[in-house]
Image (cartoon, rainbow, N blue to C red; front, side, top):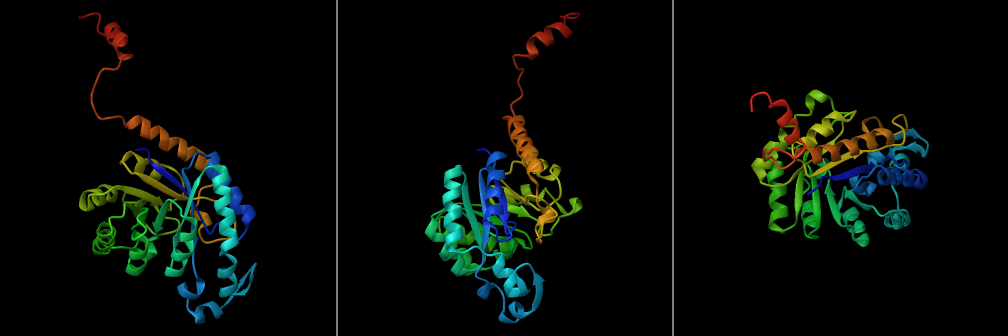
Length: 277
């Protein structure tokens, strides 16, 4: 099974459908398998006190203005659904609350996603698991016990899932990657394991591919200098194209692990060994 490459748009669209479509186009042109968004009911995710706090942004002067400005509504998601179908790419989103998961059901996407921050939100996990869709479960900021509880929820519901090794820093420093956790999670929980990367650059994600991940998620952006907390840990179009090509090359190079003499080696062996054969 080839690695499912997910382009995480998240909130890097900055509330603009034009930017959103450009990012979808980037995902399509670079060969990604899916694009992912984030959905929040801000009145459930944040306290009213927090939302009333001052914050200057292009949308207004409060935290509510900024958070609301980054949220797409039903009409926006209908356009995302239409555009992704037109472009021939899967899309899905990570819900941050129960209302948002209910909202997403109307689109009948093929995948679900549990964000690292939501891994311990058991009511949300149960709601997601009851849908029975392949679910990517990020494991940042979580203990083995946290992960086990999530795994149990999905197994009890007979819902297909895979864990994603994740370090929830933006950007992640290379020394924090701890890619060997990919093997640890696979062995400990006996399931497929992917990688959700927040690092700058490509090499760590390519290395993860060589460890047998089944999915790779990276945030994408048009320009890392754009407004937004996730932009600096995101991949620009050229880097994403190179990364996807590198991942596919690694998949091809890994082979089946059986040592054999390939046909192109035979004449070389005959030539180089002629003096003693």
